[in-house]
Amino acid sequence: MAWSVHELLGRSPWFVHYNCNSCNGCDIELLACLTPLYDVERFGMLHVGNPKHADILVVTGSVNHRNARVLQNVYAQLPTPHVVVGLGVCTSSGGVFAGSYNVLGGVDKVIPVDVFVPGCPPRPEAMMDGFLRAVEILKRKSAGLPSAPAEKEVITVAPPSGPHAEESDAA
Amino acid sequence: MGTVMALFFVVVVAPLVGLVLNGADRVVTARLQGRVGPPLLQPLYDLVKLWRKEPLVVNRVQIGYVYLHLAFMVMTLVLLALGGDMVLALFAHAFSALSLVIGASSVRSPFSRIGAQRKIMQMLAYEPVFILLVVGIYLRTGSFMASAVGRLDAPLIVSLPLVFLAYLVALEIKLEKSPFDVATSHHAHQELVKGVTLEYAGPYLALIEVAHFYETFLLLGIVAAFFVRQIWLGVGVALVVYAGAIVVDNVCARLRTTWMVRCLWTVPVMLAVCNIIWLYVRRTQGG
Ligand code: SF4
Image (cartoon, rainbow over all chains, first blue to last red; front, side, top):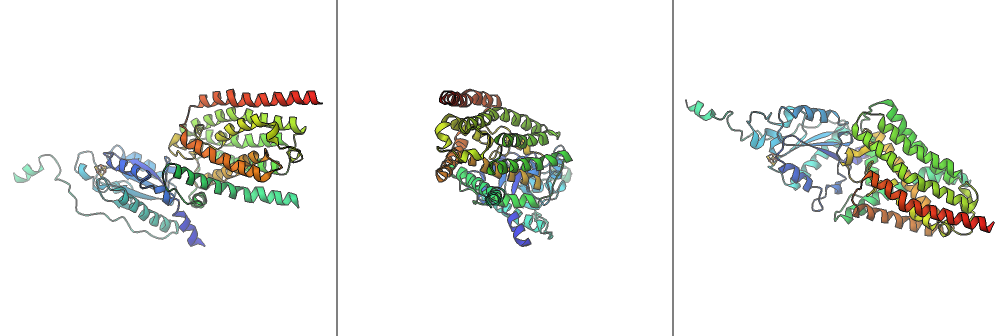
């Protein structure tokens, strides 16, 4: 019986979306998931505007010093059980903004992340795949089982820090 | 025995009917938008999920009013189903909506408060229609008891056609459908960040959803009561009215709160008043 309750829990994941300094590429592709072509409501997913109603926090963009505090605030308002999904390479390393003076380089530096969806921006299919993985984690969390930390590519394309880093190396 | 059956029907069967109707609403809305949409029992899955979530509470007052909201909604249904006083049912129903308003104003969130104020405007718009409905039924049956409706020889629709039209507009407000979904919207989840239900999380949101299922049943039950002797005709008309409400929800934009009040107080309320005057004249001349 308990099993079926957790199963039902995974049939109604509502997500709230927070944009941490994204270039909007990921956000537009996320909205594409709601359109008739992809229609995530098939899986019972709803895009809510309120973290108190949400089960999944979807973060896009590279976190910076100013919005890290806001992200923590949104995260603190999520009722348990909840999962966090990072969309795009920006959320894992900073992406094309990595090494910039204001970028922290990864959402997981601020809040724990359960699923990273790679791509710049990820295709809507990849996003839906990420959501369904998040739903599996949500069910495990609801049942009180441990869940594995998010997998993250170790290879990054971050340039050496600072505009003249190469010259100073040569010198 | 009949009383027990009626009680069982309104307390247990009514929310289930409301749940399926709301699920059908989501499927039909999705199809109208060219989407596949969720399964029919999606509201049930949502309820189970919300029930399992952590209850985040801002203050105690807020929680008390959620229970009152649900309790008075059930009380309205029970009163009408047992043939009780319609004026009392009217007040119970108004208090049910009011508890949502008080609960939403007891928190500090500005969106919740804007939602509460708009909910008051909604009540201002639809309550006259409900009151005129009760007055019309009184003029027809000579009693404020709901049981008197069942003893009529001709259905209510014959003597209250214009009140019925006004009621259909008020129904659109009560079901939180466009163009009147200003306080909280059932489909637009970012609108006012969910308005009056903003600060309710987990099980408390589930209770509000259950109250909404009861309310859906109540409102459509009143539509069916207009055709009281031909009950299957009434059920058919209620379903057609609900389908119509969904279509109107999908083809209309959301309009301003003041426009809603103006709209309701001109055409629908005037229609209902004309109907009442006609009934009154007929009654005084006939008797
Ligand atoms: S991953 Fe790419 S598309 Fe997404 S926010 Fe970053 S730069 Fe934009």
